Length: 331
Ligand SMILES: *Cc1c(COP(=O)(O)O)cnc(C)c1O
Image: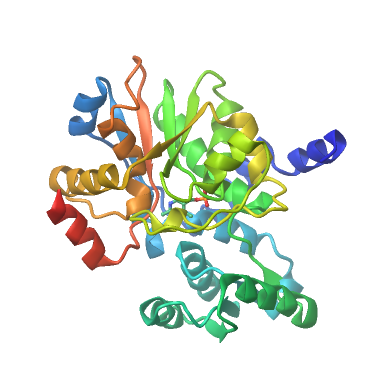
């Protein structure tokens, strides 16, 4: 990757784009609460706050990026419709938001996606296209729809409008906690991290941004250490929304995370279970494993307060309910 290429990419993802995203999506999204956590504050030795993004419609922050991307399309594209290949929180967000606007949405998925997930997407009014046995085949089909039918592909993270949409969380945090010390962000493809980090670093450069991922299949974490995007086998985890690669041809999120992350760390499955339990018992919140990784880093003693407030992003709540309840009961 040449230097000039890198700079050209960076100019498309900038703080101005995040302000624009905020204006664009404001009529459609509610501002999520920021809640102080006495129990986590006690453990960290200073104030800890939870940004409750799991309270967004369809249960995750992904709606911010999906809404911003879809609203950025011209009339022609909106009429033809949108397509994506995610069956997780991104797919749900795209399906739901497209329906709000009356835009057709197609979700490409592999035959291996469980029935429960496909039913939920169908219920949101999207068309499902089952193609092949793997996620790669689903992605290929999706890109084919773009070429042949002119559908607009809504990528899950590596896109300037998606990053800017997720970055609106950062603007809210700056207003709510002007003396913000650290933000702890669940890290997978890096759209959430890149957006929040860009918003915060450009307003409060001394704030520190920490990415947190589960120990198994931490693709971004290991890519950062290798200095280039890598691929890894997927392992079972409670934080299943953090699974998936970052794309070997990653254009935006990898360089941004590399530039803006002060620290990236890994948490154990046991730590994630304990955090799910803590959030349920103390806050009566049921979130998904990915959202509990920040709290796990505090429980593991990896994050200590240094005078200024710490914010954890509770990124979503779309786990399999049985699995979360089992994890809570185990701890
Ligand atoms: C997608 C997702 C993440 C990670 O976001 P990236 O932009 O892929 O890094 C974290 N938590 C939840 C619940 C998600 O759905």
